Image (cartoon, rainbow, N blue to C red; front, side):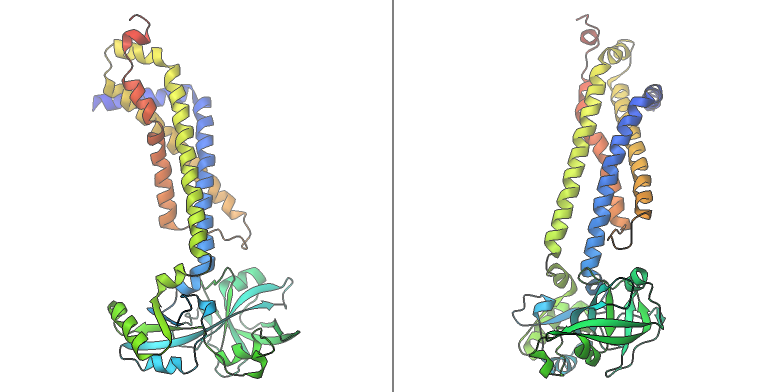
Length: 386
């Protein structure tokens, strides 16, 4: 234990005496930390913007049109499919989900939104956190996601105007905001919810679609009586309901167009940033050890053990790395406060913790070569007496 205390004293004493040099290295580590945490937060924000609504569904399974490859926008089910799914034994409830896009034009700047048709009280409709539910039928009422409110300043009780291209003409629809939900971003856009009949009336449509007033759901969200029977219920639904394929929430998320490729790119950027950190830290401490070979030789000549020398190097690396990570974390937090809400920047507790832990580990990992070199230094050769 006394060797550890001696090593700690030597390591901290050197950092204090050469604080300018070590502060510079800490700042380099801080910049690497800033980059790693920024990439992690940006990756989480992009993932949330793409999957948030689907991941928060109060459902266990999603029913798609057969051969749609589990892509929501490629699926269009028959109107009778919802009733058929609800009659399947083991299904607690099922709700159709109708997807489209629209644009709010009653704000200072037009705001693109995901327009979703859902049935109140059914899977697919998130819980109301403010206001009330919309009425059924063709009620000109809408429930908006908090993201819409933040970006536009719209509040419950306001009236919004949507622009929708139907055929070759732009049409405008006035809707009253009656409720607010939270955490429902879909396809990188904030979301608004309307009744299915209203969705069919106001959604963008081609000339052919204008001749029909029947809304066709893209998918059906299914809540099971026993969630542990997911695999069995998949088979039962595909057997009892014709021309459908069924999967779970995770598979649905992974098949959102571009989601897997996007996350793979972000993770690759984070990995190479950590690799750069290892090389930078390793290179600095290797030079540091080479510069103080005579001092290490003196320490060993007067009786210091390899343990003291090794622990001193390890502790010094940990202290400098921890300083850099702390500065980088603080800079990242301050930087995030100045970002506009349109940038998908989200701190995830687990993801950020893993990133910080990896950053703390790359110090000793990067300095491993220098630690081994310091331990192997021969006193006589270091003092040029051998």
